[in-house]
Image 1 (cartoon, rainbow, N blue to C red):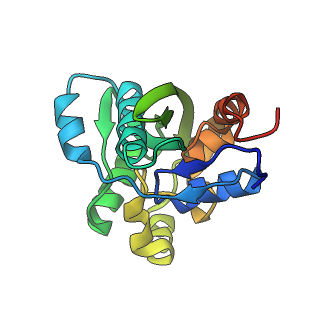
Image 2 (cartoon, rainbow, N blue to C red):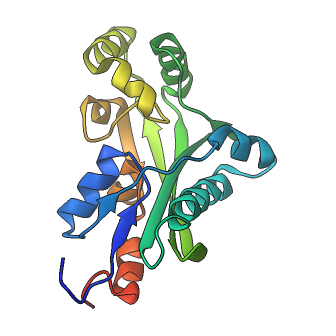
Length: 200
């Protein structure tokens, strides 16, 4: 990190988000946010999935920012909308199987929200959306997919990782690749340059 650059903390345990920032040459440290996501989801039960992604990102950024004065804190979260409803992470491989069978041959939306906070205040937040259409894959492929990917899928809201074997589930993807991975990277980079974390 340059001696003149601002300090950035990523308030997320996501390996994909860490990899995106590292790949883009962004200097940062990690402090995982401790927030009650279920309480936030319950409070925003009548909000759509895009709004929820932003609010979760804001909550994570604020939770960490309150403990790190003068640092820039990046919070992020991703939600999935399918046929008018919000979808949560599967709690078992059996639930993941049922979810993927429901989405087979149909489209859903991934909303990736992000927020920057400093000194306990939100400075910026935003969300980007991608639409993904699954192909009509066979039951035997689904069996192979679940056996290969295993319980790691339970950490993914859609029970897939596009950067892994999950790419074979899809027919088309409309939207930014980084958004699918869980971070609206281009808008975040714009804000990091404005904040002085990156050289403009």
